[in-house]
Length: 219
Ligand SMILES: [Zn+2]
Image (cartoon, rainbow, N blue to C red):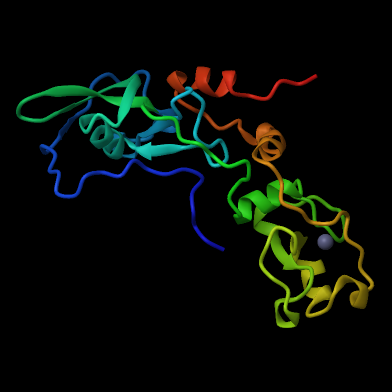
């Protein structure tokens, strides 16, 4: 399992030294959600078409990376927090939303991550069909690795700890267990749809428009 993200950060030129930024907190209102301290502020990253580069996980960078990209003119500023950062020569508000200047073409498939596997399987154990919290789930190789099974979308399913233990080092047929459905590689669109009900986390008000306009429309 890699830790590859769904998007690329702009490559910052080697050797570029940014002026030291002394932090100065301003108004307490319009702060990031859940009382996050400024050091933890994240900047939403949009593609050049103003849609998030990735929704699950949501594409965001630490604000310092966003400031670096702005200074290097790799991205456009879209919205700001009220918090101000100062260097000896200038002051600027912390960016809350930025957009890439050049459109980044994304392939149609999401990253192969634990979250995305659970999401594809709707947090349901693919053997007993019960729904569990992420902490009670694991992933199961349908054809065990010791038997040549690969770690791919087509051979890995969500399983509860109990079923995973019962199945052990056997194929479903050998274990007398049935898969809810054959595992497959989902599209980004499908995962976005599956994870939509989970996207209830508090986000800064400047992010809302971009998330709202990009959401899938129901029939
Ligand atoms: Zn189960």
